[in-house]
Image (tube, rainbow, N blue to C red; front, side, top):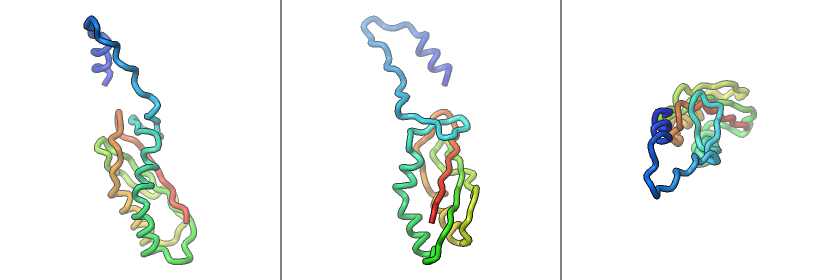
Length: 126
């Protein structure tokens, strides 16, 4: 990555060519990344668009007395796939629901991170 940037910086400009635009830093935010970054709000957007899967889990397995929270952490690999998904903390006493939520997250696809793997997390509260 640095080699390409250095090569572009050091290459002589051709007469009449406008200078390259500066990198767009507004749309990139570090989300507790090991090395990579995602556009700001990318994890929240994917979670919101797939809310139906959570609703399905809760409807089928939650019951009317569902109360508590469960926090998941995972990595988003260079293809946007979920890796190393685990429960960080849970106060719900419903293993089938927790497993259903975990499977729902595992199937998600996120935008491709820039620069490396990104760590992400999400908490479901009931």
